[in-house]
Length: 277
Ligand SMILES: Cc1ncc(C[n+]2csc(CCOP(=O)(O)OP(=O)(O)O)c2C)c(N)n1
Ligand SMILES: [Mg+2]
Image (tube, rainbow, N blue to C red; front, side, top):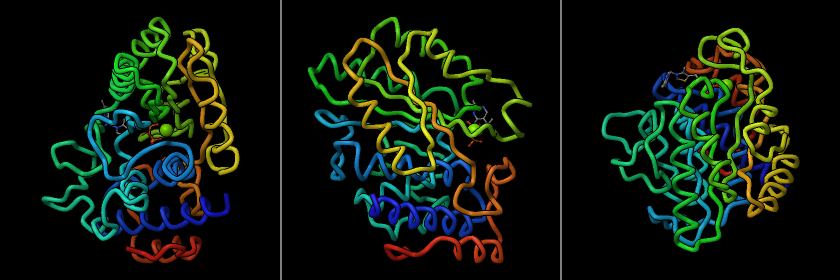
């Protein structure tokens, strides 16, 4: 567990340095979801960094809220999918690390283009059904923003997954209460997402997404609940911008980069644990 926390500190440094390097990108949601990504790729998932697109006989992950690509790219690089030096190309012309993940750049670890919100749940369900057809008993994981749930396609997918008993799917919602324009309650109230998923026929769990022990424990619990006829949803409470005091808990850092001074202040709060890229 101590090791996972050490990795998370480095991933947060990568996120901040990447968005600062091009003065664009999305640090807020990335920082908030760091524990989740590190737990998934360094502890929970059975996966192979030599990467094949089909993901047969391994767990696979789909990022639906593609704007938080910095945390995804850093985690993939730190887990061995590609050289950490490539993180320096984030959002640059001809980089494989586009602002929103794309498949045509052939970056190892990326299986769908995302960023046009609302589509990842449908893809994850398709992949989970394909695993069943292939006799592959591994799990499909996905991550979605809470604001992203404003997109109606999610609710069609959620209903479909319950009806078709897609019980090899673990979908996590980043319940940070924030979206691009402000708090989710002000933009469009989501009500009780947990209760909504349950009446749609899902099994639900709740966790503190910024507590590594709780994240690991809950993801393990979720895995133990697969294969029981219901899709599993995890309501993950996070603080947008977690780990940097002046970025935490506000939508202001949804999609802007720190300046030089802010970067210095932020990095001072996050020890360099694995070596900066
Ligand atoms: C279909 C679609 N509509 C609108 C947007 C613009 N957009 C990008 S991020 C975002 C906010 C999403 O909120 P949430 O999923 O909660 O992400 P967070 O701000 O918490 O990172 C919006 C509306 C988009 N990318 N795709
Ligand atoms: Mg949000």
